[in-house]
Structures are given as structure tokens and as C-alpha cells.
View 1 (cartoon, rainbow, N blue to C red):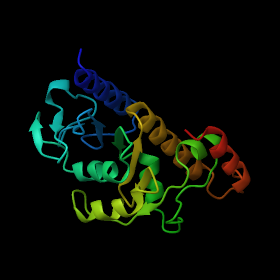
View 2 (tube, one colour):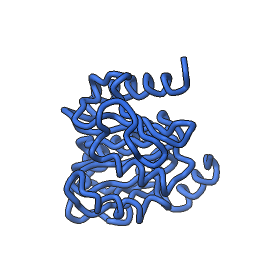
View 3 (tube, one colour):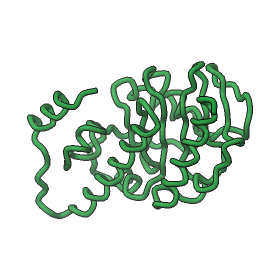
View 4 (cartoon, helix red, strand yellow):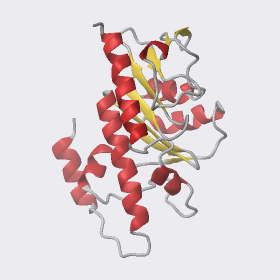
Length: 212
């Protein structure tokens, strides 16, 4: 089996798992993987992550031109912008996951860092999470807003929309976005309680110890 065929199967397995565990719903969310030639595989427009067909996954060349498969997600620019700013990334995952969207809709969150470091794994896999201002889905102005942050942040939260996370591999991006969603859930569960987060020194030590 070719590397591209393996990547197609991996996208479908990952997408189905995310869908079946309620991390995405309906036809929301999209996934991409960078190919060895610099092009990408992306989930198609209007598709459910629960029922993807490997053959129908969109293939784009290094310039973003659609080569084969169904039409790519209308949010393809979110992915290509992340790759442009993060050239070592191998995959990008974007979800409309419930708790992350809830946090993105709160009035008083810190736009420079939406979630505190509640757990070690959040600090290790996400770090700081900036909020991207609201734009309608598919609006290309969103690409510029994401690009302004992506060179320094592999994870961003789109206001009233959801998270976008890049990783060295699809498994790394998926692990990170799941950690983000779980931390958003914990953050909302703890609203109104005195919150003890990791200290700056503890976060720095984690990043020193586990920096890849």
C-alpha cells in the first residue's frame, strides 16, 4: 500500500473515531494531511467525518489546486494557512467540538490565552491558545487572521466556531485537539470554583523536559 493510500485510511479512521465520540457532529469539522510532494489530502466539503470514503478524499497540489476526489472543504484555507506558517506540520485538525466552542463564546476570556494550564498534558500539547476574532465560516479574511497567529501558535481557537490544531503528524494533531477539548470541559466545570492551575515555573519545566 502506498504512503498516500495509508494516509487516506488514517484520515478516515481518525475522523470516524472523532465523530463516534461526539467530538464533531453533522458535517462539521475537517482534517488534512501533508503529502511527501508538498500537496495535501483533505476531507471533502459537506462530508460527515463519520462516513468518509478514502477514494473521495480531496487531493490538492502544493499550490492548493484541486487534483482529484470530491471538492475540498470550504475551510481549506484554514489548513493551507497553518501549513504556510508552520512548514514542519504534517497534519491539521479543525473541529466544532462542544466545550471548545463554548469557551470561544465566553465574553471575558483572555484573547491572548483562552484556557489556563489546568493539567500537565494541556501545557505540553497546547501551551498558549489565542482567540481568533469571529468571521463567517468560509470567509477568506479568516485565513489572514489565523496566519497572524499561526507562526507562533500551533493551536488557535476561532471565536464562536472552534479549534484549529496543527501537529507533526495526524496522531499528534488529534491528541492535541482532544486535550484542548477536555481542558475546555474542565474549565467550564470549574467555573465559580477557586481554580489552582500550574504555575509559570511548572509550565516552563514541562516545556523544557518534553520539548520535541
